[in-house]
Image 1 (cartoon, helix red, strand yellow):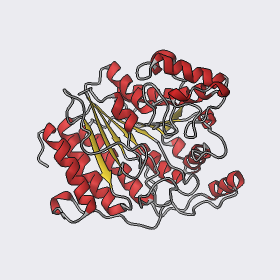
Image 2: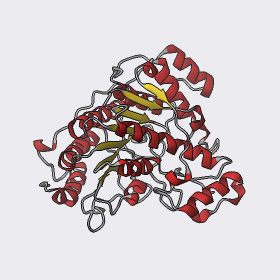
Image 3: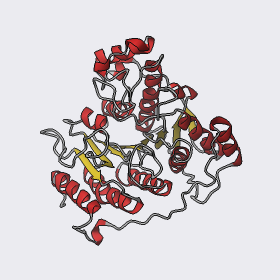
Image 4: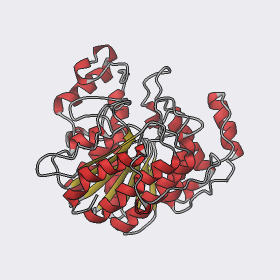
Length: 389
């Protein structure tokens, strides 16, 4: 393995655009790449593009009729078929939707191939992480499930075990569904409780099909969970499972919508905790997966204040040149943000927090809602892996 990192980027990924009233504004991708460049991280990691995923690749996860429905809606948005989740409020059809969606998928699949071949140790596609798309339909702002496609390609190439860790505020339902009955894939999702947030799935009891028991792991976090509790949940569930499962590759999804300023959810996590989570996942890739790490983006709707900083930290960690949290954002980036959005950009790469978390081994508080959530997950999933709750 040659080491180093690769960042997937093609300016055309910003064509994944549901329109000016939709919360998934592609400006978040452009502003992230401009911040990566302003810090010179594009010189520390190889920046490459890849062609769109072809039909054969898309059909590793998605049904043929669904891909054809996306193509029809892409050519004529007025023909979008709602039975496939297209043309809805969440997934409005737009011209060239297939091409933009397949391009993002192609970046993630190519990144997975580079990691598996050993061209690089780490690869990042922050335009990816579209984890709600189902094999037969669009959902939750997601058309093609690039994360599931990347995992399917890793299995096709010979990976014996792939672990997927999803820290988006929403349950990684599409990836879980794609591998529900596959014991080669461990999916772990930390998300706000399904009782109060889309997509309404991701209960601790969802553990996988017969023959793949314990391969789906879900941590349903109480609304209002902040840095300490969020990191406690992450560290209390993920490393023990990765240690037991020993994946060939670690795939992670870094939705930034856990942030306290995100308009679509109710957690209270800061950029500093999101950065700490990326550092932990990077370390676990080395501890448990021989360093093979594919990191994807995901949700995140505070598109100026949060997303670019969180994903730039992710790129910096993957590139081996972490940006200290107290670092000022570059002047040229702040000027570019204002010129593009007429909004003031954040001045530092931190929210001014120094997150601390209490290890599970320090004790369980039965009156604490966060601890109840973690224990429910451990009781549901750990025994299948030979672990004690």
